[in-house]
Image 1 (cartoon, chains in turn cyan, orange):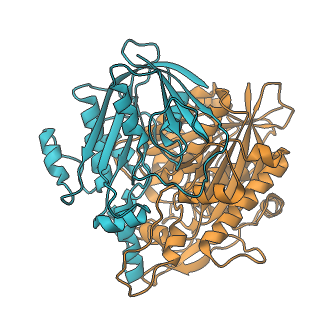
Image 2 (tube, rainbow over the protein chains, first blue to last red):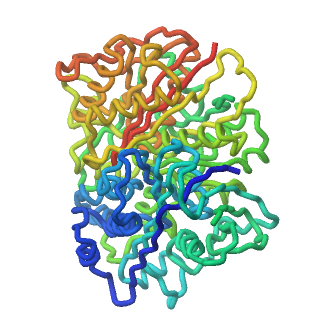
Image 3 (tube, rainbow over the protein chains, first blue to last red):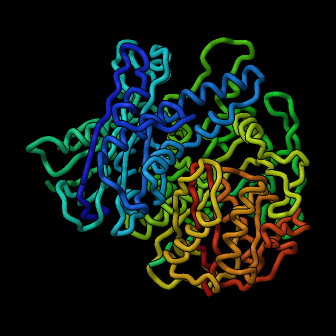
Length: 260
Length: 379
């Protein structure tokens, strides 16, 4: 178990509906009163939107670190580059750069002027718990940590659902979720106390994931759990990836303890 | 409490296991790169991995076979049972992930949407399903710093007592997306000569490799000759997604040394990132000069393996340890002429160094992702 004592100073879930086609993210940046980064993909835009929404008017110290996860990452740029390869065309330098797994975190850091570590982590199981563990394990005591998740969709959504092995009628959304952890021992509500992993009997099959969502569910569920007026002190991320449960689900679980 | 490097496995252009690398590095002569074509038909120098008998022609199968081979080799050296291996945390570092597999499924002339798997972590999921791994696992994909970042996280996991052991495994498979992308960025050498820090350097040569390291928590005093991760640091340089300044790189090297409680002038050597591109080498060279003057041996190992991108931090660490075991720091093949703008000459001959001490290892990637590690051999 990794113990800590960091307040969760801010949190936000930015959900972007998909049913009517891709939402113009420039309009969302305009609502924030500041344009988004140029020459980037939707996943990067979503990450920057969500990070800004999380921290609001706070000015973060330069040594703040950024930790980001994503289930499917930069699919649109990867598809574009594969299509160019198939057609025997030269690569797109911008799209190639933007397929680096850490580029969304880079643009969050650049947007906010941050020079702490910029790390991205991806996992089928327990991505959120592992990301929090990584952030806390590496952090200096006085460091702020911006931890989040961004998921883009690629249209047509039928193809996107097929890619993610989802039912044709499964509702999906784009989202960007962030929390801001304060320095260890500093004042604030919702104190992150520990992250632990416990093995349960009958672990789920590793090769399949039947969760009906194209993105990671746990980060948004975690923030919604934080907002519950009367919640337990433990958020359990199951290996199957979703939800809050106080019961002993089978398989490996991430247990995140947050004191009110 | 110490974080020891308990076992290594390596498959690169120089060979398919550690003994083959020992032999090739001792011979002190890297092989010449081969040539492959990018998607537009332009020939590019490239360091392909050494072939093995009976390898599958299927890219996905080949990548998984190589991953399993290096994991098995590292586990044998660490003396760990399969049960321990399959329950410890696994950290996979790669910038190419499943791309070679996706490219192999492309049908020329088709208008179908290309196949991409359901998760970015698919390669890791496939590896775990194949091996029966039941611990927690995650992917690091932070461009050329991926493996160094995974090593640093593994170090933190072991040092903070979260695990007794952790496996860091990295894979970079030959693929056109990387070749085309670096070509489009004009970062590949047109001359086909790999010469980091040289005044005439004109770009990098890509390579493929697979590597594994097992870190072990060790509370007692390590035996002489034990390799340790002593500390490290990662920093983001938010000024440009593909380029860093000397100040950015100096900052991360200083942070790593501070974290490892190591004075710069006590280092035995610096294993540079040394990509051979004009901008990286200029910034890194200036940062190293500022950090240490020119008193400490510096070398780039990329001409031995090619730039293995997301795997390079692990591949070059293992090469460092193999040579260091013999009391040597490998030279930088290809270097002949100092660049006055850098003012730094890497080793042109393999140098004898003490078998005990500390060496700084640099890995810098796109996305302003800079990581330095301090590695130690005990006396």
